[in-house]
Image (cartoon, rainbow, N blue to C red; front, top):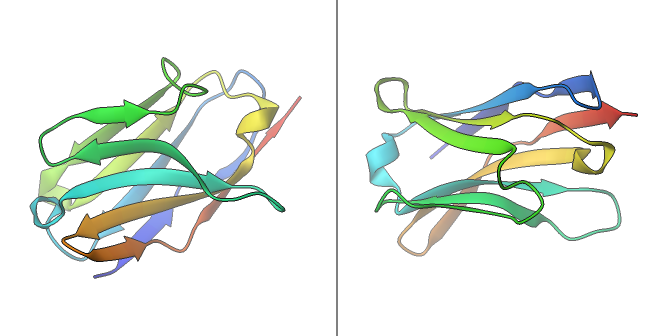
Length: 114
């Protein structure tokens, strides 16, 4: 399984970005998919996790600003990030779980300037 993340960049506070994560396998093959982020010196943290039952669980810090979506035909999941703040800066990783296996994309840098 390969996950290819893209869409990061630099944006001013209040701006928006959309991250993409293309999977080498059908989205339906995953028990869950999601996005995490990490800043230097800190542990990787959950941004949103989407289960096969169709439920999206967002971190409190992003709820109402970020939105997870899927394009099944393209085997791609997205993270639309609105009203970005400097504290959203980090490397964003897409994640997919299949039974006991955990897969990660390569990460894409998001930088929000004040």
